[in-house]
Image (cartoon, rainbow, N blue to C red; front, side, top):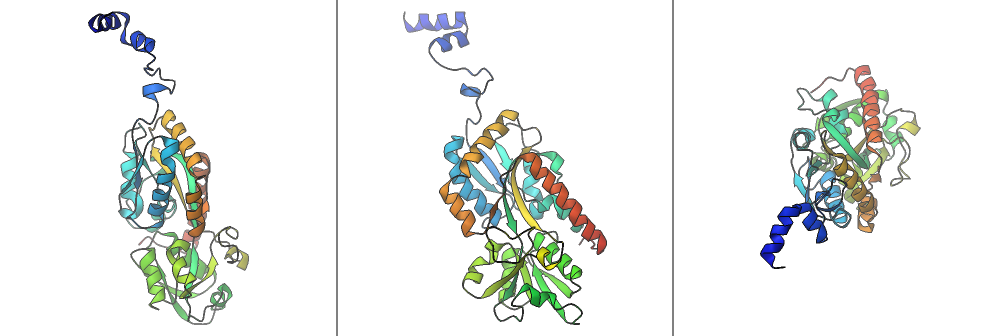
Length: 332
């Protein structure tokens, strides 16, 4: 049969029948062949500037996921409004799964309660794909500071001394953890905002403030060099990555503040895309380089289902609200 005749036969029998006879899958909607997701690279929106914890986690994991996903994952930074700009872009994306995001929990737990006129996005506008990481908040002091331990800070109660504390901005975990802690401990303290975790740590190093708070990765190099020291952590229990650091809770203060991160898509993202992404991420997190990165940066795993992520965010929002209301913290 010559080529022209074969083509006529293909049309007469129907393209699907002809191609199937040639061993080519046409995609029946069962997840096989050309209809299977993904067919091209996937865009992961990081709602922060390059270089921060969220960005570094995403880029490390982006390399690890290429093989299980079968395509590249392109990291795109969309900074602005405490992660709201990039996250809103994800919420407005098509449901085909080719644009997903990596938002922080603080966008849903603290920003709406503490930031005046906040440009917020609701978790109801998204579909959580999978949880990935959780970072703790640590108190940090200069090596020459009189605060050698968490007990030294607690001892300030009723001393009459007023201290200053640096943080990465209102609406962040570093701000709320310290503000709530000093009020619970009866310590006279004034907050000094900076434009991010890095500048806040630098302010502690330069003795511009008495004390500060950060995520461990933001201050670890200065702690390792001996310029700064960690005093305590605001985790529920001692962190696996910081086993020797006491928690505020074990000192008698029922205060847990952390930063969880998760993968999310628009509310309309397809079930097929979610299933494929979950499978790929579950393989990617086994990558030895990714594991080494987490350990080096004191980042704990939070690899849970979407329902558990949503439950944590709701629980954190409610817990934080109790303290915000109790101390009359007003949006700034």
